[in-house]
Image (cartoon, rainbow, N blue to C red; front, side, top):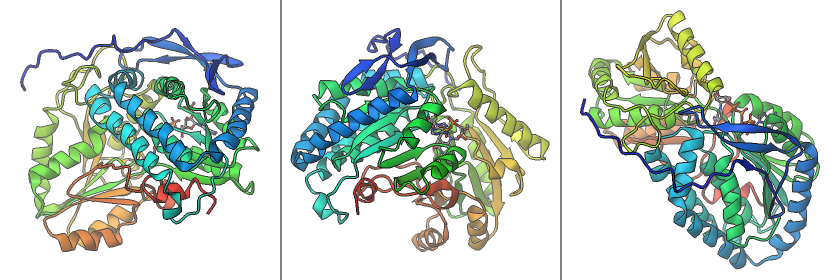
Length: 472
Ligand code: NDP
């Protein structure tokens, strides 16, 4: 492996405060719950103290959003678009600051936050800004729902915020958003951007805290729409809490996607796609290609190439521009990845990782693959949400479909083959919201995203994403 000189991104572009309050009605205010710390998962250093919103604070935020709804929903779409375009442009102007902050708080490599997350965040605001004055052409009516309560996870903190806030605002709703406990900082910087854009107070409110704060947002009687991304377990709790209330609900939950490689695929390209599918963002991706299904006749060749490639991945400082694999987001998530990987071995699969030195401080897990995996193994069924790939084999296309669909989830799938007809045949039969062909983890704001079965319901992104925020 080549030796690389360090290429650190500067932290100086980020101006961190020692503590942060809640963003309610256009102001930063104290929270009444006990504050908590957010840490840099690569170093375990405390970044800031964060306020906890109690249910009274959530109530204030919902009231502010309700009051602002009158003003915001009455604006012509073209006027709302002006604000959204302005927010999109400020995000571009402050992209470096946002990317560094995201990597500090989340642990993801700067190369990804800078080149994937931030461009997509800006693109989402630009895209939905464009819809704001054309809602009548989308086919869902033009009547907003009211106040949206939105709860998001820690794997793509700012991108998930954009997926939630941009369509909600374009359609004329106002929002109360709760970021994840371990990654609140970019949402709070976004609050500052809302002020910079002169967004009317109360249109966007950010309440920080743990699961209880999220539960208070979801349960608030004056919330008209709930949007959640996170684990299937919490998704179930939320679905129960919302049932019978008349609130509209979209859920983006877990996944256990199959990345299927046929023997006629371009092997080197497929290897890149498999690596991107599971090692992008440390595998903290709901649509990660965590199950590799490889046709038996090319198994050996593919695995040899894959292992060679994994040996070149660079793990370490997320702020180094040469880093491919950053830190695991939290001690809890690391414990979960370790538990499931140990279970993989105990149940009989064979574990392999390249030689890879882990930093002494922080939360780290080496890129790992398991061979000899049976469909009944826990590592083939449960979402690990880490840099761990389970390899299974198949002989015929029908067997590939059968195995790919043998999961309670249905968020995404990948197909690698030279034959266009086979791609279409497979896509018809795979029970997954997104099927990528000869690529993986490709996102575009114009393309709807969402799941089947335990991966949730509703679609985000594209024209379809507007339907979730309008009274259809
Ligand atoms: P959660 O589903 O618990 O967290 C997602 C968001 O929901 C967070 O903001 C969380 O707050 C909040 N929340 C937690 N409990 C409730 C509740 N009862 N009502 C309303 N909101 C709530 O995911 P975790 O972060 O705990 O991760 C657990 C596992 O879930 C991971 O190991 C991974 O397997 C999976 N996961 C899957 C994701 C996906 O996109 N498929 C995303 C994230 C996790 P807080 O952060 O304070 O807990």
